[in-house]
Each structure stands twice: as C-alpha cells, then as structure tokens.
Amino acid sequence: MRIEDRYLLAEGLEIIRDILNYVECFSINDGAILKMNFTDLGVSDALVQALEKEGITTPMPVQEVAISPLMEGRDAYVSAETGTGKTLAYLLPLFEKIDPAVPNAQAIVLAPTHELASQIHQQALRLAQNSGSSVKSLLLIGGTSTKRQLEKLKKKPQLVVGSAGRILELIRSKKLKTPKVGIVVVDEADRMLFGESLRAVRDIIQSLRGDRPQLLFVSATEQRTSSAEAQQLAPEMVQLTAGSNQVNADIEHIYFVVEERNKADLLRRLIRAIEPDRALVFVHRNKGAELVKSKMGHYHIPVADLHGAHGKIERKKAMEDIRSGKVNVLIASDVAARGLDIKGVTHIFNYDAPAGSKDYLHRVGRTGRAGAQGYAISLITPQENRLVGRYESELNITLNEAIIREGCIYAADA
Image: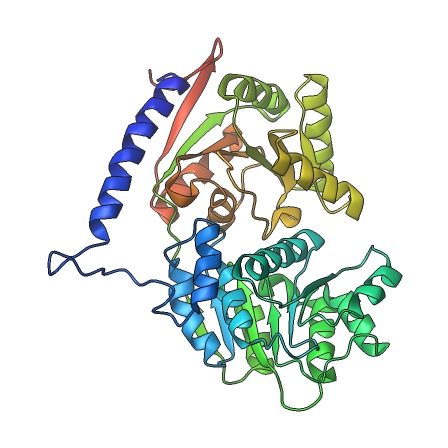
C-alpha cells in the first residue's frame, strides 16, 4: 500500500472514531453524560475555562484517578504512560491549593532534565494566564545565571519548578525561603530517586521547616526501587495508577529489516518518501544521535539532535527548532527524551530498536495523541528479529513488515 493510501484510510477511520467517541459520551437514559468532567473532580471554574482555552475538555484517565486524592492532601505515587496528562494531573491540584495572596513559595516541583522542568513551568504559566490567576511560577535550573534567578526570586513566586541541585543550593544559601512550602512534587521519580538526585530530594524535604509537606511522586513507570524509596519518604502514600501496558490503538506499527550499516540510508529514504509533519528518531546513545545527524546532514535533510552531551543552549535550540517547525525531525537519545511533550508528532522512528517492550511503549506513546493517527517505524537488523515477536506478544500489537521501493512503501509480502 502506498503511504498516501495509508493517510486517506487514516482520515476515514478518524472520522468514524470521532463519531463513535461522541456517541460514547452519552447514555440513552435522558441523555445523561457518562464521562467525568473536570468540574466533577473539584476543579474550579476558572481553571476549567483555562483548560478549554487549550482545547482540553475531558479529563484523561490519570487525571480522573489522581486529581481528587491530591487535592485532599494525600501523599501519592502517580504512574501512567508517557503522554497521558500527568503534568496537569498534579498542576491542577497545586493551583487549587496555592494561595496567590501569600507572597511565598508554597509548592516545589523537581524534574530530572532542564527540558522537562521548562515544559512544566510553561504549562504553569499558561494555566495562570488563561485562568486569570496571579500565581507566579519560577524556573530554577543549573547552567543559567544565578544572579538573574535571585532577581526573579525577589518577585516572591508561589510555585518553584526546577532541578533538585539548583533548588537545594538556593535553599541552603537561604535565597529561596521555604517556610510556606506545603507540597513537593518529584516528577520522573523513577529517574530522580537514585544516587545524587535521591540525596538532593531527601535534603530538600528535610530542609523544609514545620509540618512535613505533601509528597507527590510521578512516573511513567512504577519501578520497584523508586517506589520503595518513595515509600520511605512517604510511608502512607497511595498508589495511583492509570492505564496498563497498552499501546494506543491509533498507532500503526511498521518495521523494516535492514543491516546496521544501511540504516542511515534507509532512514533517509523513509523521510524523503513520507515527509513527516513532525518526527522523533530514537537512538540508544549520545554518539548515535550525533552520527545520525551528521549523516542526515550529508543527505541535506535538516534535523535537530537532543542528547545528554549537549549544553543547555544547544538543547534549548533543538527543542525550539522542532517545536517551531524549523526542522521536522528530532534525533534523540532515550535519556534526553524522557518526559518531553512535543505536540503534533506524526512519526516515531526506532533507529535503534529498544531492547524491552516497555521502552518501545514509552517511545511510541509520543505519537497518535488526541485521536490523531500515528506511525511507529522500527529499523530492525536480522539479528534483532526476535524483538518483533516480543513487542507483539507483550504489548498485544501487530507489527507489519514493509519494504521501500522507488520512493513508495509496500507491505513486505505484496
């Protein structure tokens, strides 16, 4: 089947799906709405209107599960797959609990990467602006001017978002005052509750005076080790889990069998044939991202790359380039891409096939959102063929083998 035919078919399926989703929202009995809305969860009218301005009208499952317990003040470990709305699941309760009239930090959100921290901060800014709230959010991360951050602290933000290292440094130097902090959120807890990050998280919590704050741990996976560490910090926490190891049904899974040495050329041909609106190419390591970017440059295909070896300015530029549409392809290592929310991703390319089904699940979860059709395309070496069967059996999906010939994509058995 030509790739153009796939898109035409996808459009028809999307129309049918929208109709079915509309019908599902109502019961025959008096037309009562069955699905829960944000008001049912206790979200204020101002924040509901703020969400509507972003086109968000129906809670995601993780929001249905988490918002009410978090607003009640429960310690919790919230786990849900990538791209399921976890950030709003805790930001909405934070905004409900923060008092804008109190000019002190009242909540701290800790994130493992600058990109994720910035993403959370930007969402908080949008919530404040769209709801007419005077809640101020401040981003505090390393690699930026401490002097400038100290100037911004003078404006008395109620919400602080950033890296554990920089926030702990400012608390210890008594530049960040925390007597009113009542909530601490640890995002990507499966990465934060290890090594140096764990020590920084513990020190931040212990540094807070008065009653111990409400503790929220958020993760795309519920790892046994991180969950145990969280349990030590919050013995009475509740586990709030939404969804399971299920892949979005709106994603089509395709794979190509290719020798390692021919992967770059195949990727080039696929990008030329598909012309994706916005694509993520996943590699295992930093050097892999640089190598693929170099090869795409040789083929005159503009791409951005995101990996741990980049500095803050390089990472920021990569994100700006993909979000603005300056480039349509972002090459990323798994570590660098954790927690990133890039809207409008139509294609995921697994340049390096993930070894585990959970990793496959997290990668492809960045496409096929909000009812849109998504495509997950994996480049599989002959030695990796066993992975196809693993993904299919463990995730209950079907991967269709394909070939590319003269710029068109066909089923391998066509």
